Amino acid sequence: MKGKGTLLVIFLILLLVLPCLALGKNGGTHGKSASAASAARTSGASSAVVSKGNASAASLSSPKTAGKTFRILDKTSGKVLSVDELDFLRGTVATEMSPDSPQEALKAQAVAAYTYYTRLRQQRRQKPESGLQGADFSCETGKWLIYVTNAQMQEKWKEDYEKFYANLAPAVESVYGKALYSGSSLIDATYYAISSGRTEDAANVWGAASPCLVPVASPGDVYASGYLTSVKLSSAQFQTAASTLGCSLSGDAAGWIGQISRTDSGTVTSMPLGGKPVTGNQARTAFGLRSANFTVTYAGGTFTFTVKGYGHGVGMSQTGAVSLAKQGETYTQILSWYYPGSTLRAV
Image 1: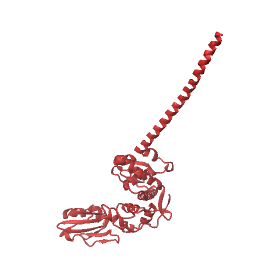
Image 2: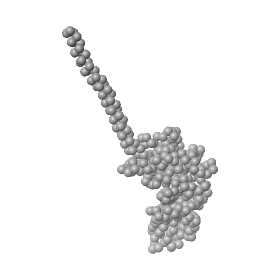
Image 3: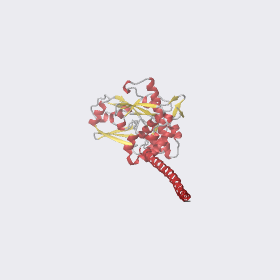
Image 4: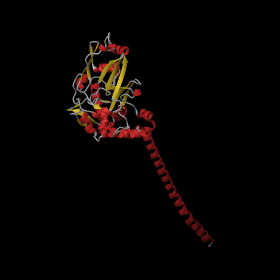
């Protein structure tokens, strides 16, 4: 009887303890799961922050760009960089257009840049240039010329980085792989900042015609900040600048400049200096002008250049692209306007 009583006590104890043990085990598993879920959420949040703070972490490596790179000689570091195509496109668009520009303008810029540099890469790999050290072309990251890294974007844009990158990157990525063709060949898709109100024919600027690089109207440019600029030079400064072109000027300064010739779009084709003809592009470089579309006057010992636009004027005006995008035009419409006759397709 005593033994039965003992067994009964043990049985009762087991009835009380076993459920608690079971509950403790399940509770431990739940606790672990909750902890894991919490860790996953925390990890996810951290990843989101990392992705925003270092956008290159996830988005700069894309499977479809694997093995596709540009070789770029960085004049800042002196090194040849091997840059993923998509990384390059984000970096070059950042140097060419304000990152808060309309999406359709950014898309147009991305396609134009991809076309231009893919064509250049084809040419350089068929016929390398010794000065490029095996690169396809050069850039200068320290001066934000041609290409910059994601880290440089963060450094420059600071607290606006996330906002700017969130606008620029999706636009670029959405058109990656598309380029402009004339027949079976990539076009020379040149671009620049501001036109004079009408783009130029490549033949007038560089001496040779190029498919799809013909004059078109770009009226939105005339309202842009920086459309009209001026440069003033004393007679002595003008003489010094002209001497870099091999022009010897003497006598009355009022007679130093001969009859200027220009294209229908306004670019100066010839400006005689002391009897020697120089091109508008040569004058632009020598006198520090923003474009070769200018007029020049002389009064009181001072030469005054009045300059329209900014850049060579051939192909797509970036300011014009932004203007068209703000009017509701799509990137395909922008590209077909500035590169008439071109066809957009995958490379």
